[in-house]
Length: 300
Image 1 (tube, rainbow, N blue to C red):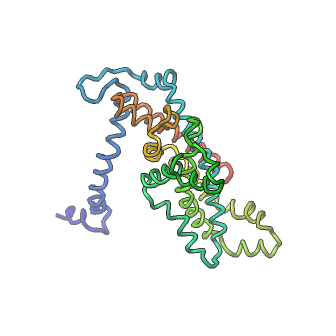
Image 2 (image 1 turned 30 degrees about the vertical axis):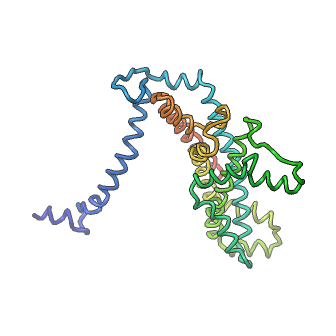
Image 3 (image 1 turned 30 degrees about the horizontal axis):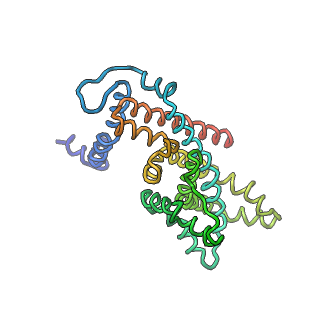
């Protein structure tokens, strides 16, 4: 009886009440996240069409096929790397500059900050549909503006060169992500002691010097979070590609997530699709560990 009373006594070290509250979320996490991940790793070692009971064990053959024989896999990986690099250059740098600019209050700064952040709350499907209309070569907003400026003589077909279409998708995604980077950097800037910046101003430090020697070192942890989050977002991108191009034209805008989806649900090759997903996960873990190592080296 004493032990039973201790189990539900918040002051007792044997109290199990917090674990009872965590039991349901932990069960949901296990069922909907851990189990599918483990099962997909298991499936990646088999050749299976997803419908029959027969699974043929092939070991690492699915991984070897993607690395050595599937040219579309390398297109998807190259597109993901392009997405990561341009995401680090465009929305992250622009978000940092906007956070610095909007850190000081001026008339209309609140409206401007809200308008920049507004695309973040839109669904990616809505963003994709909107930008697909903006890029439309016939009735798109950009082409209509070009025709209006040039009296109908100037227009541009965004989809004429399949190799460049992925760049236009990245630009559309950057528009919807810049606000998130801005908010993260703005929160980091707020944590920088104002006395440090004021002392730098009194010492005659220029805005560029304050940015390089004061703000950026103070924002190292925030920058680490933003870079890791940006890389994760760029490698998980799927819905924007699916809505705007579906991986085309000529499968040239495929990324690893869309390639995994098509392999599983269009070609019914569950083993290969799961192998692509796990290789994407391993690449993400490797890149994240490299970024964390570089940041920790700079801190030391």
